[in-house]
Length: 102
Image (tube, rainbow, N blue to C red; front, side):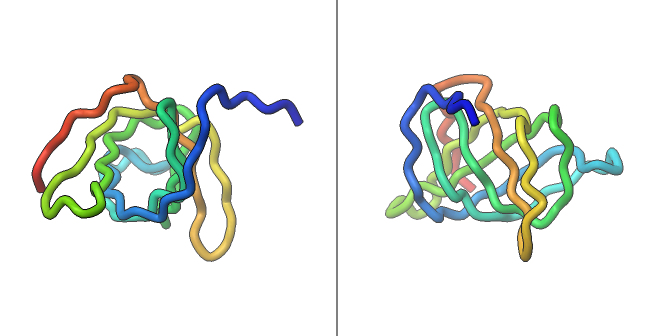
């Protein structure tokens, strides 16, 4: 297997909120877990079934900051249909997130 990652990944386990369209074309908002993170993308565990190419808004809870979240627009580049929760690899459209309060 060829390693395509250009940025170092960090294992984190942080909460995330994901918004987008699922495989049925239905708009959704769901919580999940950020498994790992780099400047270019992330791996997210989420129960919802998603397709490669799906566009998402991903909000990542910043540890130790009460209501601060990083918001990225992203695209699904890989789907891992594991058990109990599937995971999706995403590529960020920008290296810099927006910071929002929730």
